[in-house]
Image (cartoon, rainbow, N blue to C red; front, side, top):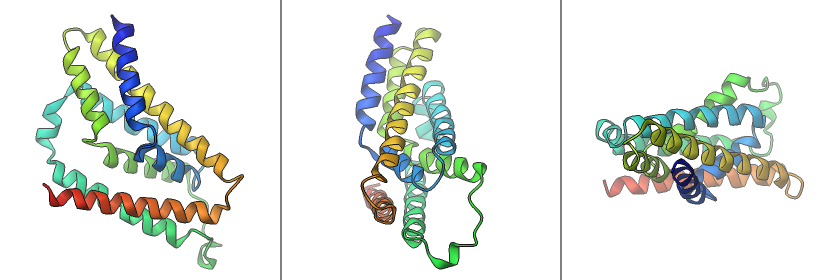
Length: 196
């Protein structure tokens, strides 16, 4: 029974996030920071998000108004879009800046993923899968493990795809594309606010 729960949850989450903003965000962050630090932040964010989805389920979304979560997420994407574009091709004023610390890189990844994914479709799918299998602790643990592993794998694929892009496309252009992508995500999130 648990293998069926694992495979169905893993498949749903993996396919839902493939090519989604999580993977694209991981790709863009990996071009700016060391991949290990980015993955540490992303992995921690998904553990917290999935734990909340499994344990609290739909109650979480009643306590945190989705309007505010979406607004903060939009503002973060707009900020990182602006920041990425500003530093896309190595401004002269940043030559003396120290490299980012491990804590800064991990914290940036954690905040971006946490705010972008809080209340997102994959968290809702995880919550609904956990609710469907809430009759046993093993079923809920299986949903948590499958969802978390799927999100980690999608993120790793994004990180390494981003690293490979540098071999074919100048870093300056990748940074510009990433900055533009962040701005688009921010505008889309703000657009969603109109319907709330």
